[in-house]
Every structure is written in structure tokens, then in C-alpha cells.
Figure 1 (tube, each protein chain N blue to C red):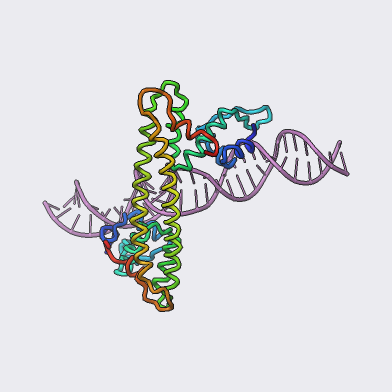
Figure 2 (cartoon, each protein chain N blue to C red):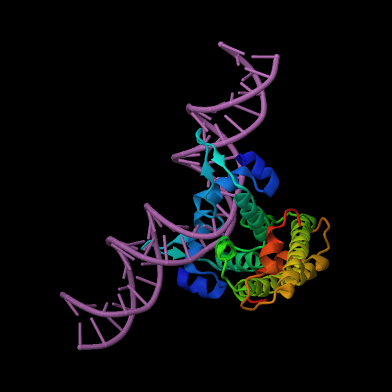
Length: 130
Length: 130
DNA sequence: ATGGGGGTTCCATCTACTGGAAGGTCAAGG
DNA sequence: CCTTGACCTTCCAGTAGATGGAACCCCCAT
């Protein structure tokens, strides 16, 4: 399989796939003409990367997960731990964003949004330690 | 005021303040010895930047908001529009993270998390278009 | 042979900082 | 007067995770 094909099938742009090879997440073989020759296993990994990245796992998380994936003797507990930590992190991010959202929504709500220059958004944002 | 002082008062690291000068968000005066001399207005702007960044506004959003702030004749509607767009973006991010969270939570829940190698997290992530 | 749609490499750019080296300035203490 | 240490300065490099573009190669159909 050439890069365009695995790009379509994995959902990752070709550029990104080359980048993933560059940082050694994948090591596709090469044809005689220099083209990358992707195996089914490569495609699986790329699909995995596409989904894991979409779920917010960092590249280094993905590297660890791929290593576990390739390790026949790994324990599912190891995988569950990484995923669990990431889940906690997502929960923290959601909580942070919600707090952000509420603060901002309050400012927007209080702003007249008309032609006058007074704006609680700007004054609210410049208050120290609000 | 020297940079350390405004750093303490605005909550931004000195490094970040120098960076903000570099990208022309602020233009502090200079003392004879070359030290940056911050005015109260500079401090207000930095405090604004600190809070706006914490609320997830991009640097370019901040630049636009600062320009509006300095513009005596701006309409609050202009400010409200920027803030409103950002609010929508935050809502989208929260929704994305929640979807992520639910998918990941499902995988984590289904994983035995013991010494056996079977792990629904890994198999789940490698399924195409799941 | 030529045109188009692949593929290849390498280098630059993006966001928003952060770290570190090398050195100038200033106030206090001996 | 000298040193110490906290502060300040500039500049250069690096981070994550790609992405854009230039310049070039390869292969197939017309």
C-alpha cells in the first residue's frame, strides 16, 4: 500500500503519516522506487494512532500504548492505567473549560452589546485576581 | 515598575511579559539603565492578558480586544461579538471532550485490568471508523 | 512526449511560550 | 573598594504536533 491509500484508510493526512515515521511511531518498508510500502500491521497502527490522537492521547502516550500493543505478554492493567490517567486528565480539562465558560458567559450576558463604549467584558477582564 | 514587580502583580512570568513585548502586545518604556519601566496602564494590560489567556482567548483575540479596549469610540457590540464567538468555541470544545470522555470511559470500563493480555482498549482503538 | 497524479526530500512556519547562556546593574555588607 | 546575590538584559534553541511549500522523481495514459 502506498501512502495515499493508507492515508485514506486511516483518516490521517499523508503529511502526518510521514511525520509519524519521522518520530519513529511507525517504520514502513520501502519499495525499490523509494515509495513507502505499508503493511496491514502499519495500517492498523495508523488507525490506532488516528483514533487515539482524536481521543486526546499525547504522542508519547500513543508510543507507550503501541509498545504495549506489540508486547504479547503485556498485562491489560498496564493499558488500563494509561487510559485511566488520561481519562482523569480529560475530566480535569472539561471542568476547567466549564469554569471558563461560566465566567465568560457571565461577562457576555452583562454586556449590552450595543453602540455604546461601556463593556463589562473588558472591565471584567482587567480586574486583578477576579 | 520593573518586570519582576509587574510579573508578581499580573500573575504572568517575566519571560512571558518579555515575549508579549516582543510580539508587540505591550510597549513598555525604558529606564536609563535599559530596564523596562512599566506604567500602571501596562500593568492593566498585562492583567487583562493574564485573565483573557486563562479564559482561552488566543493571542490574536487578545490583540483585537486590547485594540478595542484602547479605542475610546468602540462599540460594546464589537467586544461582545469576539467574546461570543469564543464562547461558542469553548462550548464546542467541551462537547468534543465529553464525547471523547464517554468513548474512553467505555473502553476503560470494559477492560479487565488484570494480568491477562486481552485488552478492549487496544482492540477498540484499532477498529477502523469505530 | 507530455500531462497529470502520485510519490520523495528538506526546510520553514505556526502557537505560545520556556530554558539557558552570557553578561550588565544595583544595593547591602565587610 | 570589593564582593555577593538578586535582579535585569539580549539572544539562541527547543517544545508539541503538525502543516505548507519548493524542487524533484515515478508511472501510466494519451
